Image (cartoon, rainbow, N blue to C red; front, side):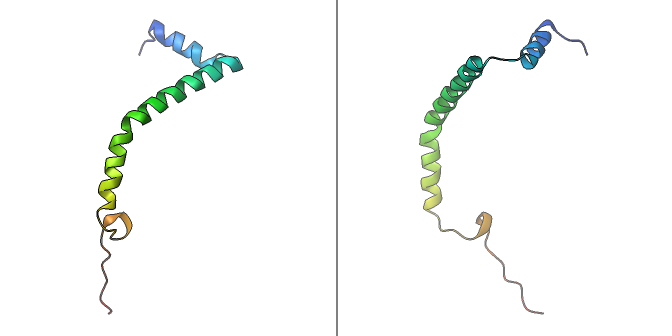
Length: 71
């Protein structure tokens, strides 16, 4: 397997020491992306929660518990 030119740059980026300001900027960017994804998925998760609430709970994992006969 050969290394492509962009692989060496990725390796450089992964190994170099980053200043605290750059780390904070990257963390803020990741938080904004996570917030955007969460905002877009919220209607779907609310619908799933509402659907789950409409069914009665039957035990762990949704499976009914079987009672074994006494020997």
